[in-house]
Image (cartoon, rainbow, N blue to C red; front, side, top):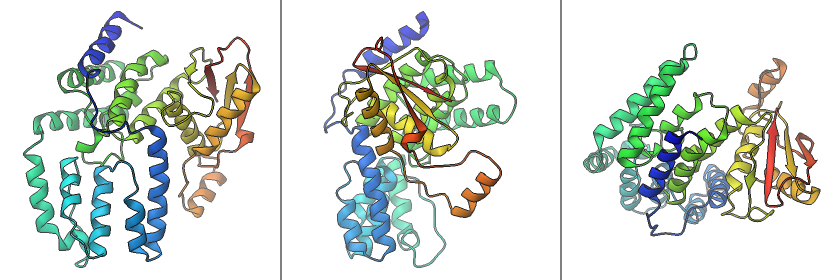
Length: 338
């Protein structure tokens, strides 16, 4: 790691390492469970059981802005007042988009939604948000042409300045509800071939996720970009505390990212190197366990397969190769991906 990047990492630790969280850390494991809960909520709602959907939604550990908004709608549809959830949604960064159907939740509450959005906007640093939006737009422009190393490096410099001034800019305040990557998209286009380049950003993003100020989606997307550029001919290892990879295990975000990348591209395989087969097989089992649900329409999937394009596919044991390497410490794993 360069001296400048090491100094930047130390600065971030000094700036943010002292933050005390009022709530228990929101681990990647809890996020993965909440995601499955959300999928079950959708199933209940689509089946017409709105009250059960609301009861289940209330078990979600930490709500994103969009999740607060969805809960507000469920409360309204069961006869309650959605105001408290709406206030939280807008304070966390929700941006209101009017809906056309006259019986929709958004239409009925349009005046209240605009009022709450305006109130929340008074508490935000609009200038900082605008700078982030411009940075994302510059990244999109660069990504649409030939690779511009100087331009992409300039974007990282801008991101570093934003971080030094006010911490990691959460995707929640950038209009995507935490669904997109926010400013982390800048990291996706650097073509870095060393994990050390990603690690300071990943550590900061994960800290924000643990505090509930950023979406774990962003952390996983950043790790998938690290995998994209550094997964071949790897030498760096991933530390873990327990081969069961509990919620707070430091290796679980990487394992989840590996699983998500495998699910998104059925052509890919992964090799898990560990000190013995017991460790490697336990890691492989966790990779299979945390895979996301694929909602790609069957006709789209069939078309992608017929054209031999990248396509989603279930993560199964035959896509994970186990490599026993006694030289690897027993509290670490190494992965490679084609």
